[in-house]
Length: 368
Ligand code: ADP
Ligand code: MG
Image (cartoon, rainbow, N blue to C red; front, side, top):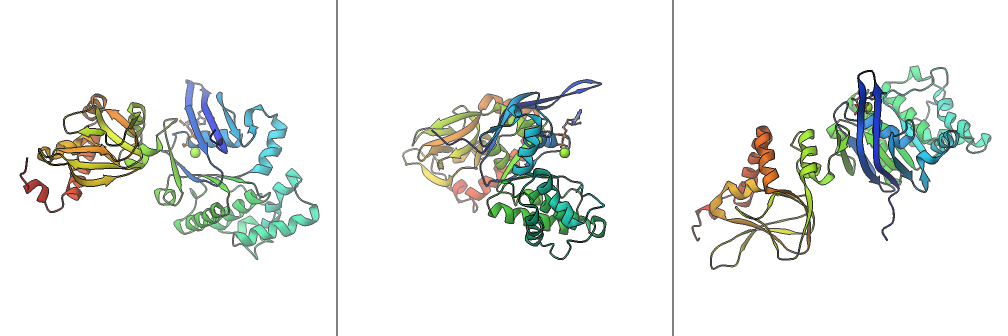
């Protein structure tokens, strides 16, 4: 049996009751994270990122569905126990640093230890100072928050979130209020903590920061985009990635199987999840010539097959191959309904053909 993931959300839904009626902010989220994973959670403003994060921290509760962290079913715990458990197991950082203004930096960092009654009281100062050193704030212990820059305040807030040495660190747009230099310092710190084995969830809509996380999860209108679709087609708008997520079906192929062929077979868009796929050129009376080898994360669309019909391109599974496929008919309807995306995909197809055949030699080669 596969080992269960560290954090697991199952069919999490959240409906907000508003004057205008019910608003579904999360529409059935299934998502898991492994221990030590550093994940960026992305999405447009209003897509549901904070709502999702609040379901994991237990700050709010889902309308339905479950959240398990390690052995703990979060929403089966009593409120008081949950607050204690969260204080020991999760550090949470927000966009606005929320340091208490009348306490020094050191005192702010010690608060979670006091609250959760962690460590001997005599030990707390030394531990807080150690965290300050780790985040590069040595010498600032006795300052009040107002004496620090925005970036320094956020780093102090991260040190406070780390006070009880929790295995999980969750940050909701922690750099949203920082200049790019301070944002970079905060990211350096997250990378360092990830390297030490912390499980980190970072909400951001800054693409330069996202690239530094090992994994990216994209949410659009309260639903998750399939991660392989997001990785393969980052040039498409988020709602379209969600639409393709819904149209795609998993398909597996035996070694040697033809996955797609110009004008044939029912796969309009193929995203490779597992295994190697050869792009071949079929020529009568010859073995197929291999033009390129693709792997996990690569995609092929029907538009590439059609770009240069004379090349007679086909796709073949080299070993066992797992894919996500959008069937030909639904892919065609999708392209008809979204001309701007069709144009983007056509351009991408032309560029790929250019890569397969940079000198035009294949096109000049008239062997049928
Ligand atoms: P994000 O963090 O991605 O910007 P949020 O999770 O804050 O998005 O919000 C998702 C959607 O839910 C938005 O349309 C927002 O207006 C709505 N929403 C968030 N919180 C509430 C609330 N307490 N009551 C009603 N609607 C809410
Ligand atoms: Mg938010």
